[in-house]
Length: 83
Image (cartoon, rainbow, N blue to C red; front, side):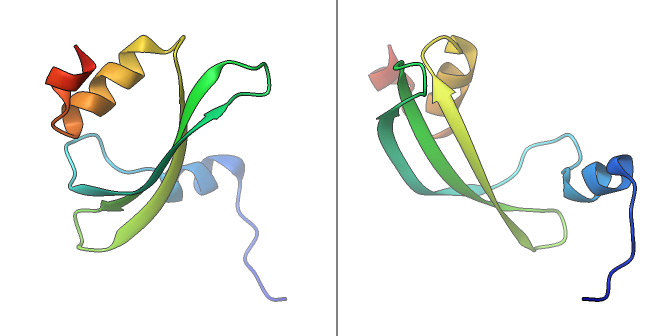
């Protein structure tokens, strides 16, 4: 396999989006449990970048990260259901 070696910082820089607001689509969201047995929401998102391309992002939202769940609900237009 041919490749160009890159540093950790180069790899991180390539994968990050600039700070801002982006359109996204929830591809999947399922309730599950963390390795520690806590309730968790596993989400997969399609995010459109500034160039019109898309990236697929997976994230895990556990109840101990209340800010993350609240902001996810707001971004999905589900504030009323969250409250």
